[in-house]
Length: 452
Image (cartoon, rainbow, N blue to C red):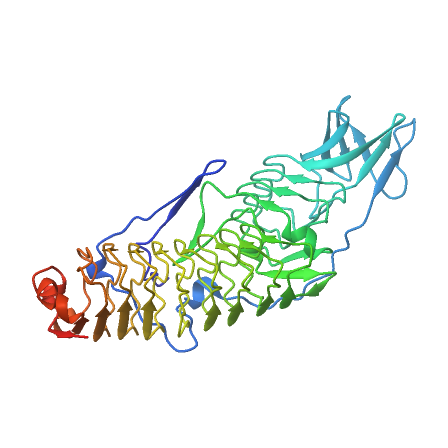
């Protein structure tokens, strides 16, 4: 299999209860420069990313209450087997009593393929709701093909379906509030996610995994089944265009991460924030209009949206966080609002279709690798307030011909233009600062220095 040209970039994300840390491990970049994607290819490798269309069977989420009589016989076509006082098999799914409720904790040796988790069990004078799928409940199952989660389940534990190598479809009811880290990791055959309530989906707490999937410069966590499935079905109809519901004010972390099938998104003006990785890897998106009501956009929010050609960033944004638009290969232009004060690490990493960028006077810091590998970038305007340009901020911008820096004092920019052709480029600076730039590195290395 062909090696990814970004195999040297494997970011790590570690999240405590309130702290997110992003780091990157980098090999010898000089020997592995960014590669311009072929037209229509999106920079993706066919053998890695082929999304073969499949026939999807409907999955019906409905309330199922099983009643077991005094003789231990279940009603309808259900099968009940008592293991001990607190453990039972119902239709070969294993349940355990915890605090007066039932949790799903696995399956029997006789289980075959399709899991339908019940809503509640009436047994020995009590009605017990099924509220949780425990950590690792179905982990390593090679038999599980589909799973319809019960209508009373609120929590899906970490690694609950990890390495279910033949799992193809999962149905998530509106009752689910939280899905644990790595819940669907290594579910490579997963194709479709079925829901009945888009608003409820938007409110799920998708936990940040201790480990993440890396698709080149794209990052999404496997707490969200879309990381592998890529297709979302609402009431058994595939959704390719959607509007954020009126009762959703925050698009939470990972909500649509990995949703390849999404081609259009409407974000209404009641939305105030977009979370970490919220739309990461939505590679079918072509444009996004972020309303003025949004005041924060989380790390990696649109990373790997390879089809994105235009995006509107609202004026209320104060910073463009780490890797927000990393790997948006077809992004041709970007307008950075004049209230933004900093550009994070990898902010526009390998946005290779960008031809020019203007960094407003409000910006003071340009982060590490912010424009790394922007192969089409010919012209950069750097605002008057910039004092620091981090290492490799403009690494391997091979088409660069003109840099306009309006700062009176030369910004600190050690190794900022590594492997970019500044020796043949023209630096434009304030007339009164021309001598200062001529004496400062790397500004002195530009082929021509002229007054603005």
